[in-house]
Amino acid sequence: MYESSLEDIDVKKERECISHKRNSELSLAVRNLNKYYGNLHAVRDLTFGIEPGECFGLLGVNGAGKTTTFDMLTGVSIPDGGEAFINGRSILKKQIIGFCPQFDALHPKLTARQTLQLLASLYGFANPMKRVETLLEAVSLTAHADICVEFLSGGQRRRLSLAVALISQTDLILLDEPTAGIDPKARRQIWCLLNAVREKRRSMLLTSHSMTECEALCNRIGIMDQGSLIAIGTPQHIKTRFGEKYTLIITISDQYRREDLTCLVKKMFPDSIEKGAYRTCLLWDIIKRENDRWSQMYRKLCQLSAQFPWITDYSLTQTTLEEAFLQLSQREK
Image (cartoon, rainbow, N blue to C red; front, side, top):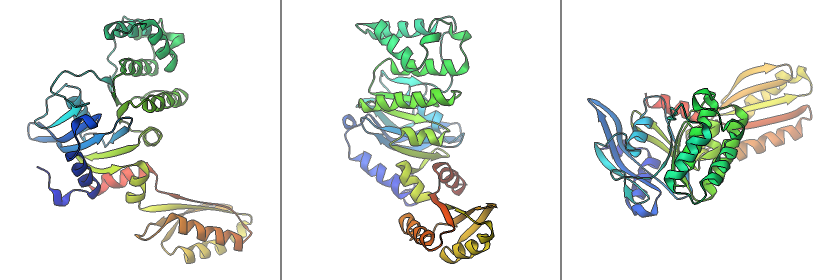
């Protein structure tokens, strides 16, 4: 079992919260899930829940246990301990879920339209053709709908896999790297589509290597390392709690004021480290201290700018989600 004394406080709160909720209240309830492969403990006492209409992102480096977790939730493998329920029904029983796997599982000899027509008929839609055309348009495949899968590009096959996951209209959709290999424009369209799906109270469990994607889609994220959940919360909470620095960029009107500016910044932020300078633009990292507040630091910058008119522009940004993720991953080693 898990060592509660070593467990992150947010992870512990999630465990306690899920223990007091009924399975039927959650789209997905995972409690103390474990999986072994020989001596390898691939997933360790994993516990989290997904509310109706919530998109939950499961992040981690390769080998963290994300794919193994998906395998158990989709019935590919059986848990060695713990339990999980989808809409109140055990994952050990037959489920109807929407699933976009990491690697496309499509029949190469069927066209995109035929693939969706087959599934729409199996699901028993009253008007399967309308459902198919709506999905083809939603994933921008209408122009390629009558091309066999084997001749579609990698990005087009990925969009078709997403349409396959969405066609069932189930309450829970599992998405494993849904936009991998997709061009930026199509990716943005898919994000809009998934956000629209979420607004209809359908829940999603998502894995992605794109932190931008996680911030665009996820209400909450959980970070896994060596099979365990090591952090959980909203993207903003993760950045605030685990970020270790701020980035300060200041632009001045006179490059001969650079030395003056450096002295001012060092006096205002003693922990600042100059990272670079290009003519009239200077950049610092400011080490985050426990009592630091972004609002207070930004107020100081506003006062500095008002006092010295040669400061023409400035920005103060917190650690990005990707930086917080990398810092967390390194901390666990």
